Amino acid sequence: MPTMRLVIARCSVDYAGRLTAHLPSAPRLILVKADGSVSIHADDRAYKPLNWMSPPCTLKEDDGVWTVINKAGEKLIITMEEILHDSSHELGVDPGLIKDGVEAHLQELLADRIETLGEGYSLIRREYPTAIGPVDILCRDADGMTVAVEIKRRGEIDGVEQLTRYLELLNRDPHLAPVRGVFAAQEIKPQARVLATDRNIGCTVLDYNALRGIEDDKLRLF
Image 1 (cartoon, rainbow, N blue to C red):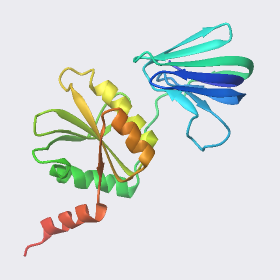
Image 2: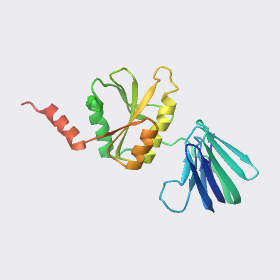
Image 3: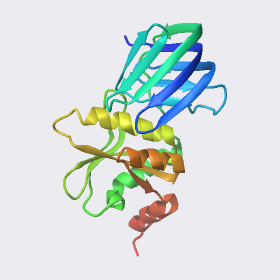
């Protein structure tokens, strides 16, 4: 079974791709996840990494230098000066995030009024199952293209990353591909919007009260 690897090391990091970036030497946490992603963390910024490579990517270790290369050919070069800790752990299959009441209700409301995303949209299924967890909503647009929708109360970078993983998996299915993504939330943070736009993922801000109003109107007799 694939494992998660945790490395604490004094290292410097260089990114080479559409732009260049350099992290000078310092003690850092390096996470190599079972999904193939690699992220570099400091002891601040909460959960957000200093730099990262999303899957799929390859990791090559050679004489104290780690080279991480993604499918676009971008490189993350980690120069190890001293490794303080190195361990691997099998975490097993994660049961997935249990959404709070608002997110679950947003999903229900949006599925019921899927045309909120655009004229001609039609629902395929809520909670569409995949090997890495259910996609909130799978639907088709007016042109018949498959659309995967990830719904959050507050849209942040981790939600975009989650949808990216779903899209990579769904696009391997010839019965669904091509599949594009829509990131829907009551509030979308600027950084999340930038990342979504960079990955050709659409963003939709949901008005929970308006959707609830639509629901109420459906229940009225007069």
